[in-house]
View: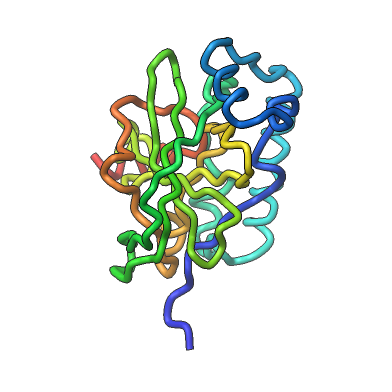
Length: 223
C-alpha cells in the first residue's frame, strides 16, 4: 500500500525546441559550434504562442481533476502563475559527463531519499554569465534528464525549495535548457507528493525570472 505518492512529472510536448542541425553532428563538433557561435534565438512569435498554449493546456488539465492540485485549492492556485515569457531564458547547453555513475540518494520533502544517478553537468551561458547545473536521471526512468535548481528568486518569488526542468535525453550531449518551462515541485500544490531537493551546487547565484512562480498572495505570506 502506497502511503505517499512519488513526484509526478509534467510533459505537455517535446522538451527540446530547435537545434535540428546540431543533432546530426558528432557531439564534439556540435559542442565547438555552440561555443564559437552565438545561438540563434527562437522566433519570438511562434515560441511565445507555443509556450502559452502549453501553459493553457496544463491549467486545463489541473482544473479538470483534483490531482496534483486538490479541488479545495483550485481557486487559490489556478491558473498557475508565471513570469513573462522571455526567449532569452531558452539557452543551448553542453553536457559534460561525469565518471561517477554511482547511485546518489537525493533528499526529498518526505524525508525518504530518492535513488538518482549523476550523468554530468550541463554547461551554458545565461544572461551573459557562464553557469552549470548538475544533472541526474532517476534510476527507474533514465530516459529523461532531471535538473533541480534554486536561484535568488527562491523563497520570495518562487517556491523556496527550488524548481525543476525536465529534458529528453539524447546521444549527442547537446541540449537546450528552457527556463521558461521551469515548474514548481508538485508538493507546492499538494503535500502528499514526494519532491527531491536541488543539490547545493545547483543553487544559482542569479535570479531566474522565468517559468512558474508563486502566486503574489503566497509571496506576501512568506514575509
